[in-house]
Length: 592
Image (cartoon, rainbow, N blue to C red; front, side, top):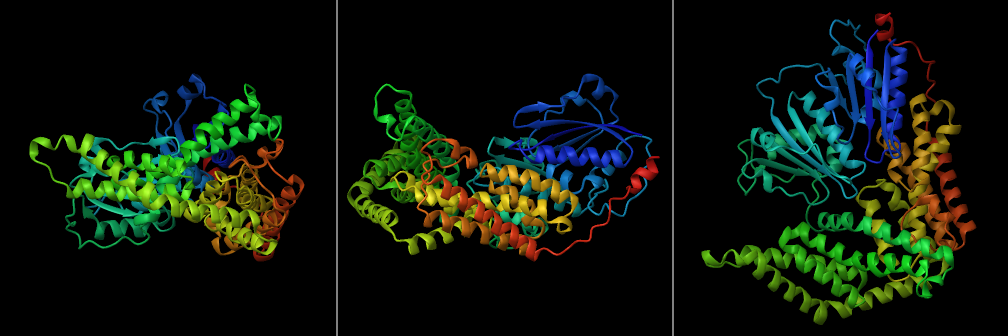
């Protein structure tokens, strides 16, 4: 019997950390081995490993999607996997860990198809470095990294992946790794600075493509990568990457990713001010007034400038930031709203890019270009365009949109709710989901609250519906899925749509349509009942804040109805698995 220790950790510290820990414990026990698991969760570290446990351990498992400090484990045999793999393939993971224990014989198991034996890379193996990033940096970033690692191992390549997530960059690539790399892969839906990779073959694609078909991404990178600076890799002429996000949409997502934390923090501060009464903030010197000043007077005033600034940053890098921020502030001052911020961001980015690339100065004046010429000329151009050309028309569009949304009839409201609701469930935290969410958030600045309510209800129903289905679905779900359904329910209550991703990834043709149907129902009912939501996030916990939600009972009904529709749809389309009772894994027999 081996003595094993493990650490689990995920970006949010909510679901995957706990699910991975449970899966590893159960599997190790079935295989006849002793294991202690330290969990890095949202509430801190639980079941912390003692010095004695570490000293006595035969091997260490790190099941994590973010950086975990490994120094305490010294030179112990160590296996590092993602939490997703620890959940899905726990027996294979434990088997690989046991293989690292000196002198321990493990019987081979036919149930470990994904276990990758340690082999020396063949002559065709490449040394690859990669970066993954998505707008929120929560789910897709780490799923893409895990998928690329598996595909590279299967192809005989070495790979190091830097994840640029919500808590910053993890597993950052070192200068030595970059220097030794034969190939660079950028799997991102937001701006990634490629300045570090000058002279290296670089291949860019979307994070979704890396999640769904990592092997194709690596094969495409080998054939189609282009050397930074414009030259083509010797492998083949440059081609566009399949699934690559180009141009305006990528830049918009970058701006949204930087804007979201400000919106969430500011919106929740505004919602908290309503605890004291819907108009209590009007009384100077009160806590309600202070909360409104923080949320509405500061955070929400920064929302559009940040959106504009980082759209421009995505287009032109640092030269675009100054005109983008100034243009966004002008959009707010001109009452052009978030649409004005989007326009100013693109104007600023492309104008700064044009000046950077086309304005040439004598050699001894080049130092003035980044600190004087580009900021001054681009800011002047964007500012004058916003004031004299763009501001008034965009303001009129925003006012027209606001009046339409606030005065639309029941039929139009239901149609809009159906569309926004369906968009929230199509890719569950991906670009389409973020587009619907951004639209609703942008309308908060014009005191239009109904779309926000529809979007949050629709975003909660996919994981909630799946949780209900796993609870009542019996043998339509495996035991592992039924356990994961509990975590999905918690994520759904918190308005984290990504809780449904593991189920959608495993069975997309059944799960995604069922989720879309339920989300569209929730969104349509929320709009039909004229529910308004003044906070941009928080899930069910926002419902407890007085006056944050109008027509609270109808809102709860809309969420419940969408949840039930998703659950019933899954019950109809999911076939019976006729899953046999769990049997003792072969590894356990060998260990005994």
